[in-house]
Length: 138
Image 1: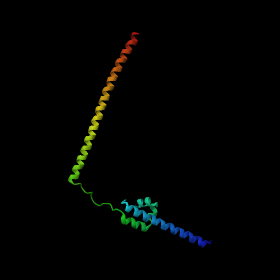
Image 2 (image 1 turned 30 degrees about the horizontal axis):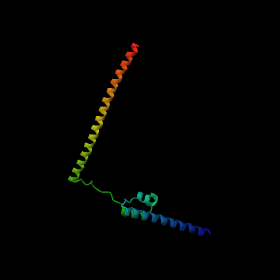
Image 3 (image 1 turned 45 degrees about the vertical axis):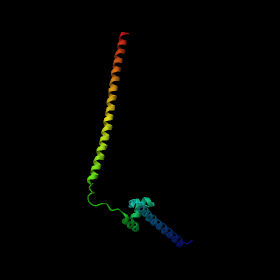
Image 4 (image 1 turned 135 degrees about the vertical axis):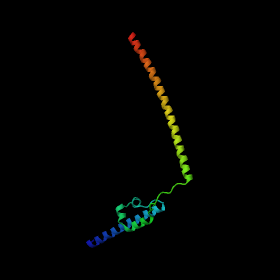
Protein backbone atom coordinates (compact mmCIF):
# COMPACT_ATOMS: atom_id res chain seq x y z
CA UNK A 1 0.00 0.00 0.00
CA UNK A 2 1.47 3.34 -0.99
CA UNK A 3 1.34 6.54 1.01
CA UNK A 4 -1.30 7.98 -1.33
CA UNK A 5 -3.54 4.94 -0.98
CA UNK A 6 -3.12 5.01 2.82
CA UNK A 7 -4.14 8.66 2.88
CA UNK A 8 -7.13 7.95 0.66
CA UNK A 9 -8.16 5.06 2.90
CA UNK A 10 -7.94 7.28 6.01
CA UNK A 11 -9.91 10.02 4.27
CA UNK A 12 -12.59 7.53 3.26
CA UNK A 13 -12.77 6.16 6.82
CA UNK A 14 -13.03 9.71 8.22
CA UNK A 15 -15.81 10.53 5.74
CA UNK A 16 -17.72 7.37 6.73
CA UNK A 17 -17.31 8.18 10.43
CA UNK A 18 -18.47 11.76 9.89
CA UNK A 19 -21.49 10.60 7.88
CA UNK A 20 -22.34 8.08 10.60
CA UNK A 21 -22.14 10.76 13.32
CA UNK A 22 -24.43 13.02 11.30
CA UNK A 23 -26.86 10.13 10.81
CA UNK A 24 -26.73 9.35 14.56
CA UNK A 25 -27.62 12.97 15.31
CA UNK A 26 -30.50 12.99 12.82
CA UNK A 27 -31.77 9.67 14.19
CA UNK A 28 -31.61 11.08 17.72
CA UNK A 29 -33.67 14.11 16.67
CA UNK A 30 -36.27 11.87 14.99
CA UNK A 31 -36.47 9.71 18.12
CA UNK A 32 -36.94 12.74 20.37
CA UNK A 33 -39.67 14.13 18.12
CA UNK A 34 -41.39 10.74 17.81
CA UNK A 35 -41.38 10.23 21.59
CA UNK A 36 -42.51 13.85 22.18
CA UNK A 37 -39.42 14.77 24.19
CA UNK A 38 -37.90 18.27 24.08
CA UNK A 39 -35.34 18.69 21.30
CA UNK A 40 -32.19 20.48 22.46
CA UNK A 41 -28.46 20.21 21.87
CA UNK A 42 -28.04 18.35 25.17
CA UNK A 43 -30.93 15.96 24.47
CA UNK A 44 -29.63 15.15 21.00
CA UNK A 45 -26.11 14.64 22.36
CA UNK A 46 -27.39 12.31 25.06
CA UNK A 47 -29.68 10.35 22.72
CA UNK A 48 -27.19 10.12 19.84
CA UNK A 49 -24.03 9.54 21.87
CA UNK A 50 -22.48 12.70 20.44
CA UNK A 51 -20.65 15.61 22.01
CA UNK A 52 -22.38 18.96 22.38
CA UNK A 53 -19.51 20.81 20.66
CA UNK A 54 -19.83 18.46 17.64
CA UNK A 55 -23.55 19.20 17.40
CA UNK A 56 -23.06 22.95 17.89
CA UNK A 57 -20.47 22.97 15.09
CA UNK A 58 -22.64 21.01 12.66
CA UNK A 59 -24.96 23.34 10.70
CA UNK A 60 -27.17 20.49 9.48
CA UNK A 61 -27.89 19.26 13.00
CA UNK A 62 -28.34 22.78 14.33
CA UNK A 63 -30.89 23.54 11.59
CA UNK A 64 -32.83 20.36 12.42
CA UNK A 65 -32.74 21.12 16.13
CA UNK A 66 -33.95 24.65 15.39
CA UNK A 67 -36.96 23.29 13.48
CA UNK A 68 -38.08 21.17 16.42
CA UNK A 69 -36.98 23.25 19.38
CA UNK A 70 -39.83 24.45 21.57
CA UNK A 71 -39.76 28.21 21.84
CA UNK A 72 -40.11 29.60 25.35
CA UNK A 73 -43.43 31.25 26.04
CA UNK A 74 -43.38 35.02 25.80
CA UNK A 75 -45.37 37.22 28.11
CA UNK A 76 -47.06 36.49 31.42
CA UNK A 77 -48.26 33.05 32.33
CA UNK A 78 -51.98 32.50 31.84
CA UNK A 79 -54.06 33.18 34.91
CA UNK A 80 -56.14 30.33 36.27
CA UNK A 81 -59.90 30.45 35.86
CA UNK A 82 -62.19 30.90 38.86
CA UNK A 83 -62.97 27.18 38.93
CA UNK A 84 -59.29 26.27 38.89
CA UNK A 85 -58.56 28.78 41.64
CA UNK A 86 -61.39 27.44 43.78
CA UNK A 87 -60.25 23.84 43.37
CA UNK A 88 -56.67 24.79 44.24
CA UNK A 89 -57.89 26.68 47.28
CA UNK A 90 -59.99 23.72 48.42
CA UNK A 91 -57.07 21.32 47.89
CA UNK A 92 -54.73 23.56 49.88
CA UNK A 93 -57.25 23.91 52.70
CA UNK A 94 -57.60 20.12 52.85
CA UNK A 95 -53.83 19.74 53.03
CA UNK A 96 -53.61 22.31 55.82
CA UNK A 97 -56.48 20.65 57.74
CA UNK A 98 -54.79 17.23 57.45
CA UNK A 99 -51.47 18.64 58.63
CA UNK A 100 -53.18 20.44 61.52
CA UNK A 101 -54.86 17.18 62.58
CA UNK A 102 -51.56 15.27 62.44
CA UNK A 103 -49.87 18.08 64.37
CA UNK A 104 -52.58 18.05 67.06
CA UNK A 105 -52.25 14.27 67.40
CA UNK A 106 -48.46 14.54 67.70
CA UNK A 107 -48.79 17.25 70.35
CA UNK A 108 -51.30 15.15 72.33
CA UNK A 109 -48.94 12.16 72.21
CA UNK A 110 -46.03 14.29 73.37
CA UNK A 111 -48.11 15.80 76.18
CA UNK A 112 -48.99 12.28 77.35
CA UNK A 113 -45.32 11.26 77.21
CA UNK A 114 -44.39 14.31 79.32
CA UNK A 115 -47.08 13.43 81.90
CA UNK A 116 -45.84 9.83 82.03
CA UNK A 117 -42.22 10.91 82.46
CA UNK A 118 -43.14 13.38 85.22
CA UNK A 119 -45.06 10.67 87.08
CA UNK A 120 -42.13 8.27 86.73
CA UNK A 121 -39.73 10.97 87.90
CA UNK A 122 -41.91 11.66 90.96
CA UNK A 123 -41.98 7.94 91.82
CA UNK A 124 -38.21 7.66 91.46
CA UNK A 125 -37.67 10.72 93.72
CA UNK A 126 -39.96 9.21 96.35
CA UNK A 127 -38.20 5.85 96.13
CA UNK A 128 -34.83 7.58 96.35
CA UNK A 129 -35.95 9.46 99.46
CA UNK A 130 -37.17 6.21 101.10
CA UNK A 131 -33.87 4.46 100.35
CA UNK A 132 -31.85 7.35 101.78
CA UNK A 133 -33.99 7.21 104.91
CA UNK A 134 -33.21 3.51 105.28
CA UNK A 135 -29.51 4.16 104.86
CA UNK A 136 -29.55 6.80 107.58
CA UNK A 137 -31.41 4.49 109.96
CA UNK A 138 -29.20 1.51 109.28
